[in-house]
Length: 371
Image 1 (cartoon, rainbow, N blue to C red):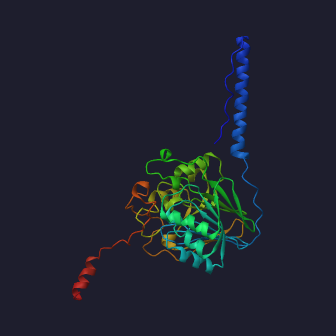
Image 2 (tube, rainbow, N blue to C red):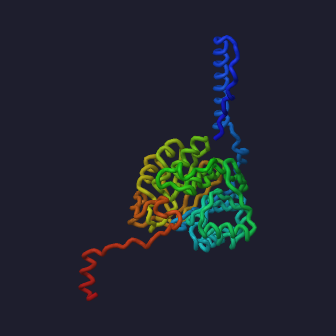
């Protein structure tokens, strides 16, 4: 963030020292006032784009698709324009395109690639080759993987317009709905600035806020606690009706400070039932419960569908109900650390379903049956 700099020192002239001190005090006071005005401008009055148009009253739909250990969120505006925020893992393309077809979506006005990890852009090339995509919004932080190369190649081959995300960008989805970009905020986080295990693509995720009348949803990608802190410090509008929980419920995101300083009513978590990284973590679920935020999870409830007409009311429907043994408030045990040290971000595997040990009664039944 730019800060006003004091003027360079001037040569001392032969004047009365008391008068000089008076001038110095006045200059310091003026500088302090200027700094205060600049800070007020930056945090309160800085340009955040035009005010959103009034809601048309039509239905806005947000589909948090169940793509396993990844993110893919399909937004359909009241006018039928569609945006896709992330595209899951390699191989998820067919599932995403089939969901779009069922929902009457034949093209995308905008594809947001929150960051260049395989669990977020893995099927982006598949989607771009299956349906027309007008614009692709990218974080601007590259990743040296074949998956990212395939993503860029698909943009070139399909003619989609590649745009680097910047705070303040606004995308009109029609009918009074819009997406506002909040992050990444320059300068980008570097490896040296990140906490132990932090990751540059995650910390520099594209964060957007979906706005439609009185409804809002914060879409955080894999933004980490440091990202949350920087956005808060720059005065970004972060409070929202619905929070897409960062990094699949990782303990490194959705910090206590973030939840305390901003208001959310509902949280949605996209994760796989078989992931090895403890997503969602018990720490995050406890923080959400302490903040009185209702939680929905794709691992237990499948695809989540949010609908609203832009008033105070919104509805969330789930693909299925949790099974009897699925506790919505229980986190997962981590088999690997969900940080850059473990290779998680480059190879996001879910692993096989956990093996269950048969009960003694089951063993005795097998023996009795001669098996």
